[in-house]
Image (tube, rainbow, N blue to C red; front, side, top):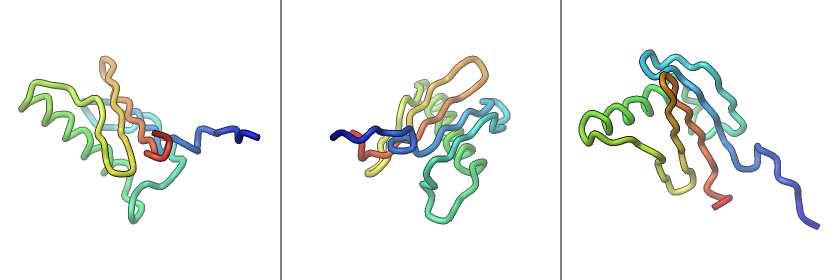
Length: 91
């Protein structure tokens, strides 16, 4: 018998933030992926800095970041950034 998978089984977190200000518009945390409960603002500010770095230095866009146990995917609209963190156990 196959187990039905819920969104919480593979998505750790979803964030939507305004690109310029870094203000979090939406967040859904299904699994705390941080070691000590680091704030969402700190996570998104760091990810925004990486996005800006790639744009300024390489004139390129980050599509995803691969960690040993997680993948973080990015998508960009006009003024918002969508970030989805997935557990690597589904890949």
